[in-house]
Image (cartoon, rainbow, N blue to C red; front, top):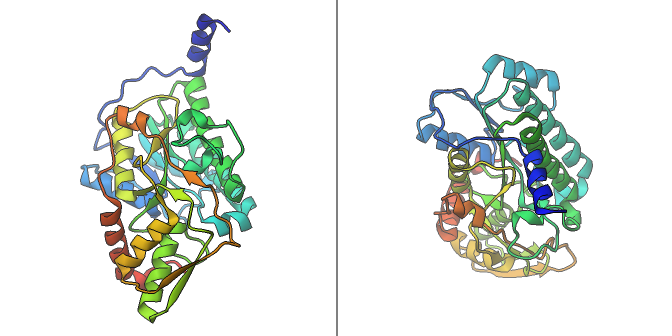
Length: 335
């Protein structure tokens, strides 16, 4: 293919001509999933930044899997901006046990919200995915162009496929309708509002709960899944919220944007830090018969840096505030 053909193909694949600019603080803004970990942080950030017409519905008020209900909601509220943070999420155990649920529920949520947003011509939309979209053995740190270049991690492939479909949906809207919608792929997130359920949580909140309960009970040891050797990157959800608003106001393009810190730690190291923060002085053991998941998952955040944003909350500070939130809200947490 000649360079001229490549340029023409690029023109065909993206029809957006848009210059990012500050969002109108008085325009209707819908945060899908506004009570979840990411959505609630985005809601807080938008309130702090002076947005006055925020819209959100709990799952009991609006089932995003119900297409007619979603379209009726958009007809009523006519949002100018949308962040799609709603999703069915879980850790290795949940993803491995219920792959149909993770694929079906997330596809329906995404298609309904994105189709309704298209029907009512939402000006700016941010779709949030996950770093699990990238191949299991992708070169580290993972760049955005690693997408669809290899096999996925089998323990969460169904969820990943749903999120990949969302990215392509955004790109298709840009190509066919010329709307400046974008996607962001966060690394492992944590913070206030996380899911600390023993069976449904991700690794960091699961470790916080396990070590805190061990410290309270005076247990001599804690046993974690795997070997502790995989490396993971963690981003505080308040940083993620700040990145989302920054991207909406400063970035446009068909490529999904990695959102992370650019550094990682082993699961063993994060376990040691959590044990210290919660005051657990016992022994940590590892059950190597349980899966480790992807050996390493570190995002290349060069594109995010080029857009003018970098993380500001250190892991130690973020963990201390998250542990405090967990303890303050222990009685009302999801079980």
